[in-house]
Image 1: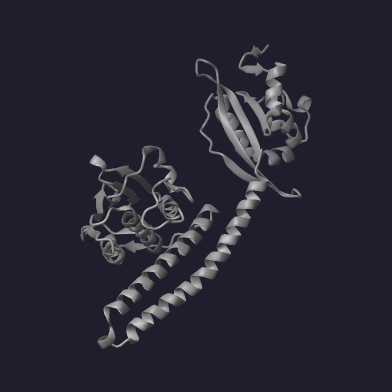
Image 2: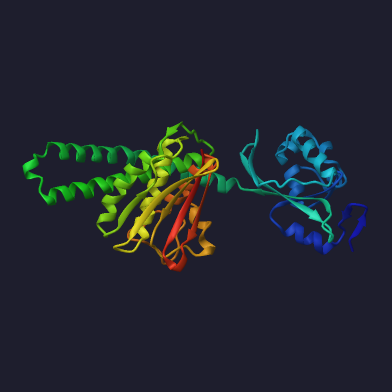
Length: 366
């Protein structure tokens, strides 16, 4: 049976502890005064302290090496406990960190949740640590392989593009037959798409690893949109799709990373053409709204089911049954979100009424 002493719940139910000890994660509960009220066996192994040493102890009284293992600096923990004593708990995202000076290296993921009584009053924290070392190493290895592939792809693709441009210049005008023009256009378009994907994939790896640098400069979106629509029109023309540029000339200048924003919009236009029906339209608009500019790309595709509207912005995401004209790698929209987030903006998708397609919206600060 459980007993309650003031704000501290003391767990002495053997069945409850058996459940906590069967979970392959370290679990600790803390009362509002900062005292430890529950630890499972994995938490004891993690800290190197027994339950008699942990139960009833104040978090700040734990040795420095234990706080390091738990992923806390003493000053940071004191601030959090001061909030908790006021029965306030700021929402904390999951945090992944490496335990320093440990061989072999270990990486832990820490999550926190409030513990409340039936009336909603805060009683303390539930803290969970999960060992993600194996997952972390696998991700690092995968990203290293991706990095090598990208760098080995980028140079030959750039060389192919250079050769195509050179051929286009040196072939005499009198023998520029339609078959040659079409062949050069198809080759150039294919090489550009591969180059776009490799650059975006490299940026995704860097941004998700926390290595992102924005080279901001003043950008006129109307000029950028004109060129992007011109490029997209080459691909769209093959399917009878008109790409309409509805971006006005008098937009405010925005301070952004021009290359990343250009590739972000290129991905959205690429996606719109990929999923739109033949002999239809793709449109791009941009309008100022207070201190932001809203960019919108419209397609005439099958739409995005509500349950997939967040998932499609994740890496390798694919909606079953919606492959489009060519099968993508599921990287374009993931890149778009990372770029928009890095600029302090927002990206989302909505369906158009009467099943007339989708509109992808991007909000960027002016």
